[in-house]
View (cartoon, rainbow, N blue to C red):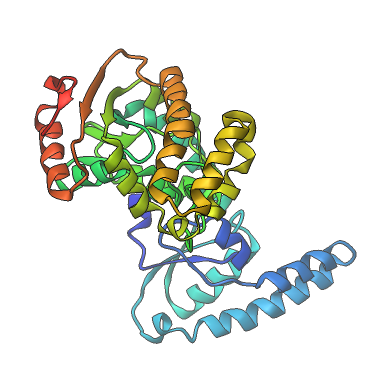
Amino acid sequence: MYDLETLKGFDLIIDARSPREFKEDHVPGAINLPVVFDAEYAEVGTTHRTDPMLAYKIGVAYSLRNIAGHLELPFFRTSKRAKILVYCFRGGKRSKLWTDALETIGYKVERLPTGWKGYRNWVRETLVHAPAKMRLNVLSGPTGCGKTRLLHALRQAGAQILDLEALASHRGSIIGGIPGHPQPSQKYFDTLLLEAVSRLDLAQTIWIESESKKIGQVQLPTSLFEAMHHSRLFSVHTPMSERVLMWHREYPHFEKDPVGLVEKLAYLKALVGGPTLQKWKELAERGDIDGLFESIMVDYYDPSYARSTNKNYGKTGEVTAFVLDTLDSGYLAEVATKLIMDGDKLSAASLG
């Protein structure tokens, strides 16, 4: 049952757990129709400590009312004998309550073996083994060099990509949070990653960006992190003027509040030194956004990225360096096509 293709064969997947549990992680495509809601679940748990029978009575009463309410949803208003998958935490009482009701109505119902817990174990185990089967090409380059834009251009040109930053809802740097887009939990990031991997042909090349072990608050599986380190490296170099423009595009919120940006970076004082931090403050206060962005890259990001890349990447010795003259979309489309068609023959030269 723990196969994403098999899961797609159901007309409806019901997650019977509480909304809090569902938010942390859930099976792809599932909808949350809780047997008990968060406060009810807490009440049942508290009562169970002193009176298990009363707890079950309270829980069943809530469950019958909640299931009755869910059955008013549009999906259940037809007489179609839909195929439905139901799961709860371990495949126990909550999913059984849903299953009994649906089978009584006449639906074709299956329960997920060992519930979400079994599914979660399967996700973790699969992510241990799948990366070893991947043929990865890794795009490397300092912050603002356009790796993500090139990665998307490769996808548009027909290549397979794995966009880790999109899955993590984070750009990967210490200021890479995306306003209005909270990161997924670690568990749900794993689910999203496995779902993305399942859509790839592992026998064909997959393009990916170099990343640290952590992207914001989520971590890459160790097996994937190690596979990236032992894959072919494509080292991207971009003129600073283009990188500054990229920062304007990626961080418009910092362009509007440069002082706030420097405040976020204040804890770097021990790494970059007091004079550098003071320079950033002065650039921010007088509104020299280009100078601020360039200085942050030159004085912090570039040396940090170089140390990390030299330590972790290029271990196979297969490194191809090239220059992106511009980050214009038309130009990147041409570069992507050349990378796909002739990547093995590229040398350390401009692709323009």
